[in-house]
Image 1 (cartoon, rainbow, N blue to C red):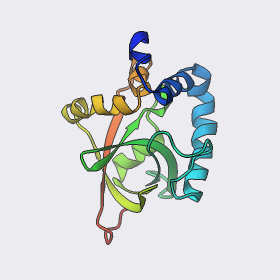
Image 2: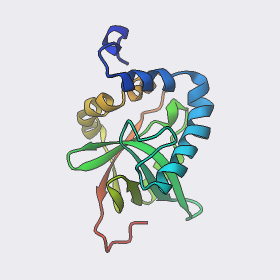
Image 3: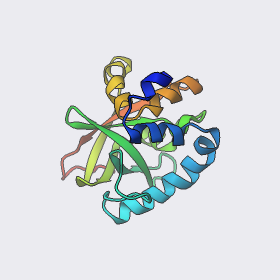
Image 4: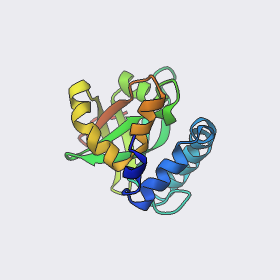
Amino acid sequence: MAEPDARANLPWYKRLGLRVATPRFVRKFLGPKVFAKADRWMLERTKGRLTVFGPPIFPTLVLTTTGRRSGEPRKVSLVYAPLDGAIHVVASNWAREHHPAWSENLLANPGADVISKEGSFPVRAHLLDAEEKKEAWPDLVELMPQWDFYTTITDRDLRVFRLDRASEGADAT
């Protein structure tokens, strides 16, 4: 994680993100149970233009995966990083001890759909291998410093997926 003096050089919204996302109560309850669900609801209704706190400070999307056991659509709101012409998402799960269900769903079925301020479109997920992740990680942490902090408090290797636009005619889900 960024050293305290390095944090001072971060923009206000990244310092705020770190301050809000690091307390245990937020990571265990408020983040996944309240913030994420409320944001998903608002992002869907505003086509990615608003979260419950107003315009997104970080790039945010709603990802619809197919449940690996149920086969039902499953939706989650996520911060994403636009890198190299693709969308990158980190399966941080608020640094909890298990991978988020959406990442398990993408492993079972890499076809998904995205709603963001750029529109709605199908995507195909690719789990980054160790070398790809190592290359992308500095850019990801530049966007969202708490992801680096999360690696210090969980034994889990955070999965990173690249979401590439699928052809419109393909069955993405």
